[in-house]
Length: 125
Image (cartoon, rainbow, N blue to C red; front, side, top):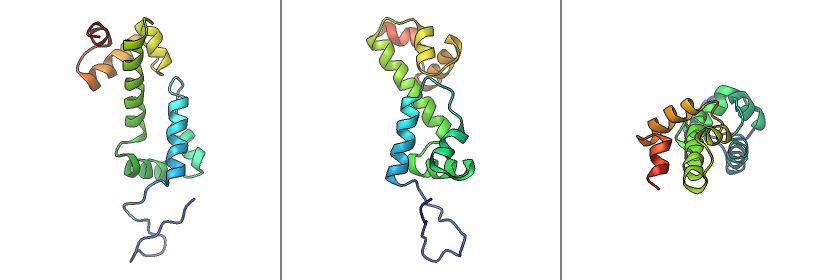
C-alpha cells in the first residue's frame, strides 16, 4: 500500500484527496474491463490491491469520480451500446456479454443511462 502524505496531517490520518496511483488504477480498470461479463464484487477489487473494501471504494471514487459500481455500470452500458451498433446479437446475448443477468436488467439500466431502450438505440443506428 502506498504511503499517503499530507502536509499537516496527524499520524494515521489519511489525506482527503488521496487517490489510487496510476499502476493501481490501471490494474483495477483492466480487471473491470476484462471481467465485464462476470459478477464483480467490491471485495475482489480491494483484494487486487491488498486494501480494505472501504479504503478501496474511497480511493477509487477520488480517482475516477464515480463509485466502483457506478463505473462498472457505465462501462457495461458503453459496451452494450457498441455491441448494439456493431452486431446483430440478441438483446439477451448482449445483456449476458455485458454482465447483466437478464434482458430486463439491461433495459432498465440502459434506459437510466441513455433515456431510451436498447431496442430503440439499435433501431436508431
